[in-house]
Length: 327
Ligand code: NDP
Ligand code: GDR
Image (tube, rainbow, N blue to C red; front, side):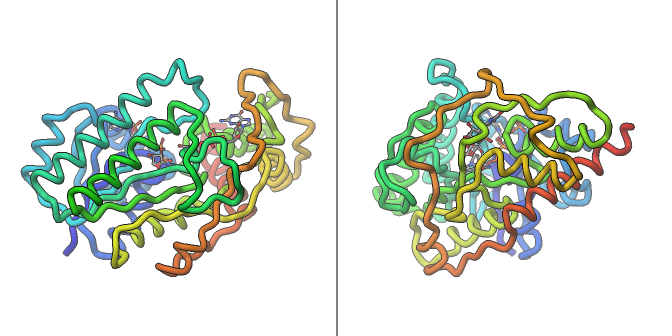
């Protein structure tokens, strides 16, 4: 039986990946902060059934707890490590990004160094991001597009990407980077725009008179479905060679498109319920962030299953179901 370690198991992707690996017969270990574990114990994680986390072995280790990471890695051997934990919100200004940079870079470096020292055979997945392209000069982006990060988060991911490649090229470890574009689900945290919209649409359909405050509704992104994307993570580590892959839909939608699908699913017109606010405004990129997934489709046969519209409707239905017991 293969054994996998997932950092950031309490985030959106963590338990989808755990579910997928358990289905393939893996023994799954997850790293979580103490607060994350308390959320699990209190059954407070969005849309994660208790049976799922009961099947995983969970360890209370924060990313900055190097002695805790060291103890785990010297005690238990892993076949695959999926490093998903990160400060993942992009919207903060660069000046506020110290914690993001420190957290994301130091933890990746430490984890790679410890694995190299004690378990160099363990395969390592790094959660790269389209934000590494930042302000790209070409669209769609591929594995060859120059990196040009424009946020603390993007800079931290570029550093993690280079650290990961360095352990592959200079130390011979099997390390792969998935350069993933936005992916969403009912488990998405509410500060991200898709979930912010589906949750507000559900509240409004149930009688709330609030106005949803959004930033730039013309902003466009390449949005996919999280359970489709965790299959790509596994495929990257089970490819015959360690390589980096763009994972994307190749299709752009706007924030207004999400609003239209979400509100119309509940029989509402989105323009009646949405206001724009400078607080959430970010400029739209001149060249859009949209990915070309040709390499991963060709080399490992990865395919998308769920469409943008199906995903948004599923998120709305999940939010309605969650809110119902509260009214
Ligand atoms: P989330 O923000 O939902 O989850 C992040 C996870 O990291 C949480 O489990 C969080 O724990 C954990 N974490 C953050 N800081 C620490 C820390 N100091 N110590 C321990 N754990 C920590 O992210 P997603 O699941 O959406 O994304 C997974 C990875 O993929 C991230 O690295 C993200 O940057 C990257 N990514 C995501 C994309 C997306 O669209 N979702 C696209 C491209 C890349 P806690 O629950 O305690 O907060
Ligand atoms: P992003 O996701 O920054 O792309 O990062 P987010 O959902 O925050 O923004 C997507 C787009 O929506 C626009 N937008 C708003 N965003 C938020 N959060 N709130 C608003 O009110 C709002 N109005 C408009 C944004 O300007 C942006 O264009 C996500 C994270 O998961 C990262 O960790 C990951 O690396 C990238 O996706 C790829």
